[in-house]
Length: 136
Image 1 (tube, rainbow, N blue to C red):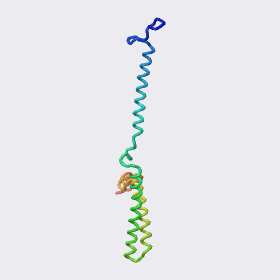
Image 2 (image 1 turned 180 degrees about the vertical axis):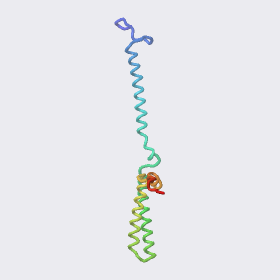
Image 3 (image 1 turned 60 degrees about the horizontal axis):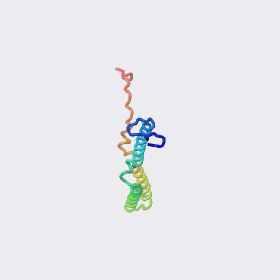
Image 4 (image 1 turned 120 degrees about the vertical axis):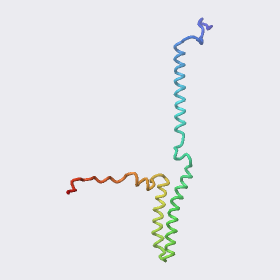
């Protein structure tokens, strides 16, 4: 018993304040759980970057570019060595290797689709058949 002669809230009583508090507590618990699951979803890395780190992806892109340029330069030097035209084949094939390296770089970064996908996406329009041109 308290000093005023009233007993404190009992378990079986239906006090409106306690009912409201328990409903608010359940609502707050639900909101906290929803926020935690939302944060867990946003913390996951994108699917394209889950398997490789940023450094590995950077090294892959640099090696794609360097390999294209190096192969172009070696082919140009080989052609110059065979035919005795030293600077011309090297310059031409070095530029071609640079272009190929840049294209490989763009493909590795998923910026340019492979050629078969580019060619099959927009088929040419079909020619219209005109019956008026045929006269028997």
